[in-house]
Image (cartoon, rainbow, N blue to C red):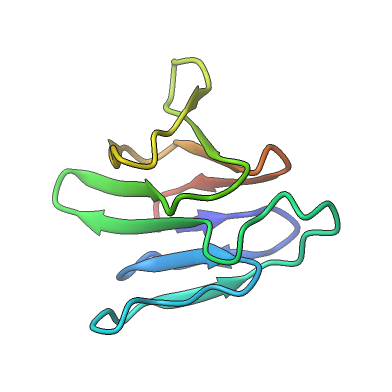
Length: 106
């Protein structure tokens, strides 16, 4: 589950794409999560999160202001758009430097 705080929790039961106006690829079924960004720090399709056997695959979708991840016990690091990362439950995802969500157990 992705927890954005303030009561906004999103199940990660398949591919999740988050952005200002997210879109999935032609052959992809995804849960599209639209988030308003008054600072315009969030791209239209900003980040993709997908459950996999070993955790969650987080991919920056070539966003303008980047995505950062912080796995439990580690520092916040920028996510390279060309290098999706496998992360565990407890990982913090920061979008565009302003919006945060944490991967939590369902």
